[in-house]
Image 1 (cartoon, rainbow, N blue to C red):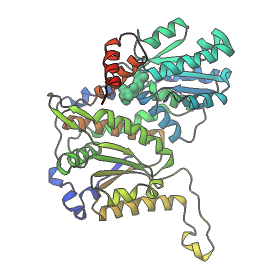
Image 2 (image 1 turned 60 degrees about the vertical axis):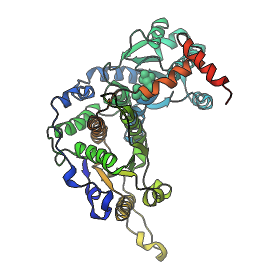
Image 3 (image 1 turned 60 degrees about the horizontal axis):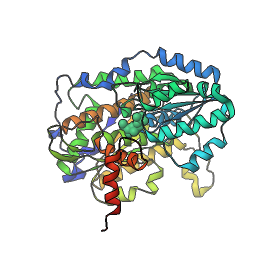
Image 4 (image 1 turned 90 degrees about the vertical axis):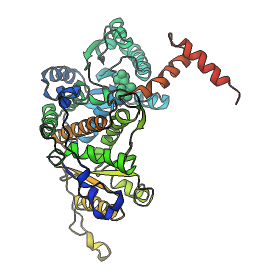
Length: 435
Ligand code: PA5
């Protein structure tokens, strides 16, 4: 079971930069849990996802996710975290419009045995539309119209969107996404779970893990609800102590991508200019995705001796799938004899945590038993919940992302998309301005 060890957030050694236990508060907001639209996903029936996944598995050997942001990061996290896969090979393209990456990607693809799932909640994202058009043309050239309609599927929640219309034009099947849940909160739906099923995972276990965290939210006390404790500590560190950086550092290579998933969830949900009452607040702790032990040799110097403006959270995997013993008979290295790689990685995490604490840097550790479907479900839901609590404490809208829109409008106007003529005029003035 996931556990949050927050001891070193309160240590007296952290002095004036530590949170005081008396600042913690009970969270009593009627209807909060029911207002979380992503919550209903974890009680959903998964048979439809399995049915679609089984059809895909029976016909293809490679499954490619073509998505960006919340339509991509959850699937990537699952693919890299779960190592005991017995399903299809899963690949990713579409999170960028880097032509070199795309050209190289197709050099290693056997189109006939590959299905491309074009995932876009809005059905309007330019990176995904561009990738879709490129993929469609490649498939058409070698497999014709039949290939286009059989080797591509589109997942979207937006009927009437550009991608949806294109699906009708090219006779491509559409998988229905989730309508009222934001992309970055959608990993525990068809968006992440179809990838998981195709990989050969037990998708119900993800939801079981998430539900075990949800059960704890019946308590309003941070001492009984770890996600609430974690949220309060982050929020109070920002409000009371001016810490505005949140570092997540799993000590696990397989959880490296979890850091990228967390980074989007945290940044888009919590970085907000306006409060719900319309006041300018510029709220947000900048998320940093780090990985141990690698970043001990890259980032820890800064975390330990740079500005004391961070709250650091480690993820410890209590039991790894493999345990490799080291034989070290040479006297120079005999201290390692009989130790395992897990002994070393656990020791590194603990040593780093203590050295930071002694230096006055608050840090906490999330423990998971092993990396499994269940514990990934716990982790995903823990962070979705924690982010929702923090947004609520800060009185901001956790679920929108207005700061992303302006850049998108400018890009569309520069690419001459119809409907953006006004923005184009405005941009031309700026670009030609003589400063
Ligand atoms: O959180 C968000 O809404 C965004 O970052 C999206 O994940 C990203 O823009 C992709 O959107 P879509 O799935 O609509 O293509």
